[in-house]
Image (cartoon, rainbow, N blue to C red; front, side, top):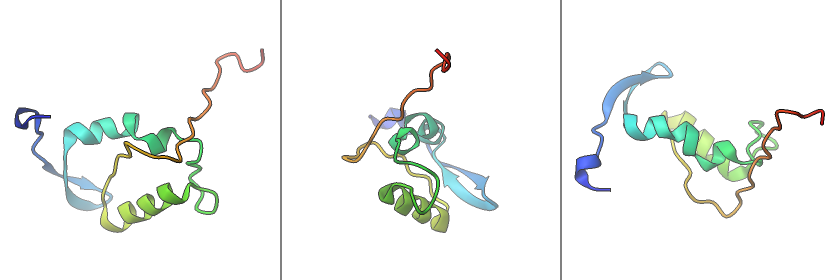
Length: 86
């Protein structure tokens, strides 16, 4: 990535606080974050991937957003079939 592609962070409100946000990568995060597409990500503190849980807690504490781009523990979610009864 070159500097001409750099997206200057803007001040926005997230979870009741003003935080600087890189709009380009924040918009990409939900689609491309490996954690959000991993079978080990359960959303339950007791059964959630321990790596994802640590990142989640860190993000909550500091109002950050992180995109995971590399993980040796990644397990792809099984795609839901449109015709699940067949």
